[in-house]
Length: 66
Image (cartoon, rainbow, N blue to C red; front, side, top):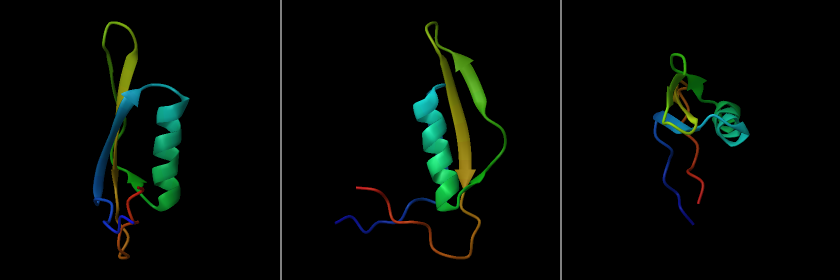
């Protein structure tokens, strides 16, 4: 079992699709907060997005998923 904690700062990246939005939503559900707005670029085939998230709570960050 992995008992490492998630980092206080996370940068999620990926194609602009429902999977990416789900990853950001999951992080928000865990207690992370958005840090700034999203960034987007076009790689010639699809839109790639990035969203920074930070842990601002006094509690420890969540355990990392295996």
